Image 1 (spheres, rainbow, N blue to C red):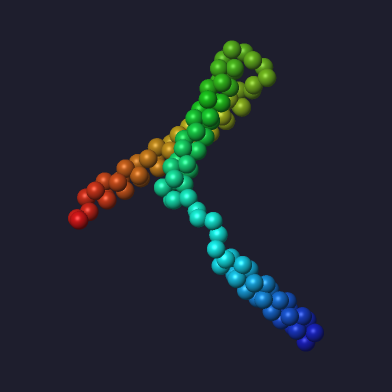
Image 2 (cartoon, rainbow, N blue to C red; image 1 turned 90 degrees about the horizontal axis):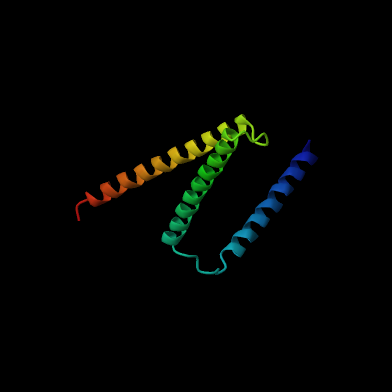
Amino acid sequence: MKIQNSAVFQEMQSMALEAGRNNQINKLPTQVQPTSTSQFGDMLSDALNTVHGLQQDAGQKVKAVEMGDRSVSLAEAMIASQKSSVAFEATVQVRNKLVEAYKEIMNMPV
């Protein structure tokens, strides 16, 4: 049992040394990251584009089912419709939270 314990101990020591080296590497200067405002704006724009894409896809599938296209099943159209609905509702909830946060910030005393 002593042999296994020392092997585990050696493994732990080597992992600790490796982690220490990774920390030193990570402390080196890196490129300047873009501001958080542009990152947030890009993220929000991507999210809205995704929701729009889901809505367009659902609309196309529903129209295909209504027109009698046999390549799209009713189940596919319903799933696409529900995905777009859930994504839209999530977007509305995020918007509501942002509006609440904005109102709260505006009501803060200066």
